[in-house]
Length: 160
Image 1: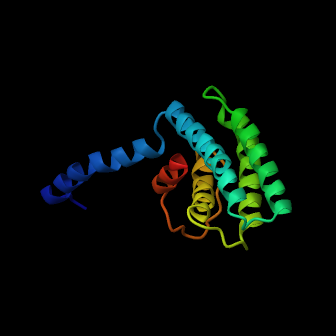
Image 2: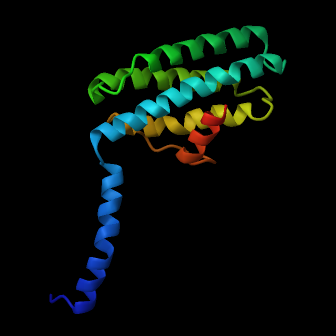
C-alpha cells in the first residue's frame, strides 16, 4: 500500500496534537505527583471546610455529623501523610484509604437533603477519586459518568 501526499501531510498535521495528548497523560512523574497531592489536599480541605456549614444547617443529625467529622479527620490524616517525594507505590494504600473514607462520607450523607453547596462539594470529592487513583497507578473500574469534570470539581473544592 502506497501512502499519498495527503495521508502524509494529514499525519504530520495531527502528530503534534497526538503527542501533546500523550504528554498530558504520561507527563513528568513529578507533575503527576504534584497534581495528585494537590487533589488529595483539595478533597481534605474542601470536606473539612464544609463541616461547619453542614452542622449549622440542622439537616444532618448529631450522630451522623459525628461520623462525618470522624471520616473527614481520617481523610485529613491520610492527606497529611502524603508528600511530594512519596513514590506511587507508597501512595497507593493511602489513596485507597482516602477513597474508602470519601465514599463512606458520601454514603453517610446520601439520603439527606443537603442544602447548596454541600451536595456539590461531596460530589466534587467523589469526582476526583478516579483521577487520584490513576495518578498513583491504581486500576480504576469503569464508573458512572459524573455531572462535573475534574477541573470543575477542583474549582468547587477550592472555593469552599
